[in-house]
Length: 71
Length: 512
Image 1 (cartoon, chains in turn brown, purple):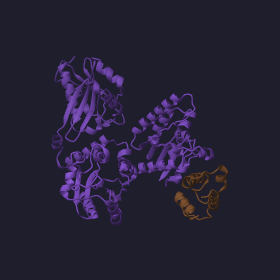
Image 2 (tube, chains in turn orange, yellow):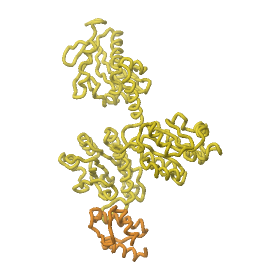
Image 3 (cartoon, one colour):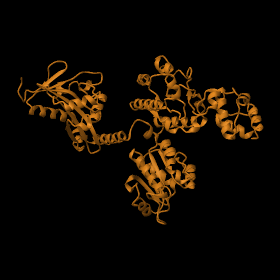
Image 4 (cartoon, helix red, strand yellow):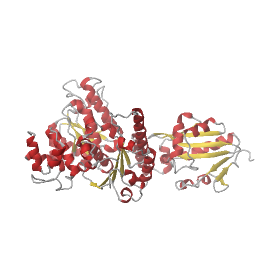
């Protein structure tokens, strides 16, 4: 979880915690959401389906999703 | 900094990579409307940067005429005070279009036109997007998910280049490069072993590195040395038969065993520049770390771990990062030199009176008659010269060639050189030989005004007329830009016949 938060912090360059979610700040809008998943695919070397990307809206969700992919 | 994108695809993701105030476009297809409508954001808001970035495939499909785009850009830039960054088009390699060749040709044509446009303005920068593109810049997944055509990696590169461009315009320009010697300018340790500096193998890496540094020097960057060696050894290294950089290339040489930070402070003091305008290159990590600690204002470039990357690193991380103005703006190297030479001239000008100053320049003027090798330059002069241009007649290459071939015309070019610089062709006169010698065109580039060149050219024309027993007729047509030449003929003792016509000839020749 810590590492994930670090990745997001670095990507969006804002302070956040595990409860932060899509829409909480300007940069994490629906477009930023896609760029974030591009970044996650690159960092964790995994691929997400459309449903997964659209379904994971909080950092917790993303954490769960990564776990399900054995990351 | 207010940033606006003119684009036909969604590149709003850039805001994740750039810390600018993004002025939102209405929608990403609206670039044409923005350019056409004089009440649009780009005309009304005081924007600092406008980034034009068009996707080739989308552009082709939209059937917009490239010439219309270029015309709109000319119209826009005349009123725009910020920086306009123009990306070139990148056609994707794989496509199923039947007319592959036509697309390739189109891409080249479009890019040529954008480039030609960019060259004309000081506040327009051409961003060679096509050359930085790599296959992993495009994503089809996110294209279908959210019409994002590019990957983060691509946005990252675009953002970096935009930052470099802005730095080139607004940033504190670095002036001085401080270099270590051993394992930096050559391989190995001088005085202890045969140094590596040659045309092959590892030695070539250093040779190429020196060549690049030499280029920076030619652009006006000051080179200095800060190295721990015996002075004689260091100088021996620079005198190495393969060394591109010679002793004289360095304005200050601190080759001693002192602490490098002390040397750097001395360099800054001697050159009278701030520490923040210094860039330090040293292969030794410890030296770099110490310096960062003691003098954090100095720009310390990280040296590559892999020596094969030296030259690539130097371009990307040193030249483009610290000295971007040189590469990215429209001030080409020659111009840079010209400005530098001009600066020297002004310095000279201050301590002497003007006459003395002119004499000290050792001006050489050469007048070329009907010389075809400069046709392009002549045409360019008629197109571009506005201020010292008495008739402002615009001619193209064919016109000039016809004048030269036609015995009824004489084309005179003026070549100028002084002790600082060879300026090349700086003036042009076109004479029409009839009953009188009529001066159809008389112009000079502004760079060499007030050097007596105009007098020499006119004198040449008068002597030419004298030989033919003809009078000289000059014309002046006023434009908003050439007012300063209004009294040119009168000052040269021509008689004003009417508003536009002046004549000289009483003193010689037969008057009809």
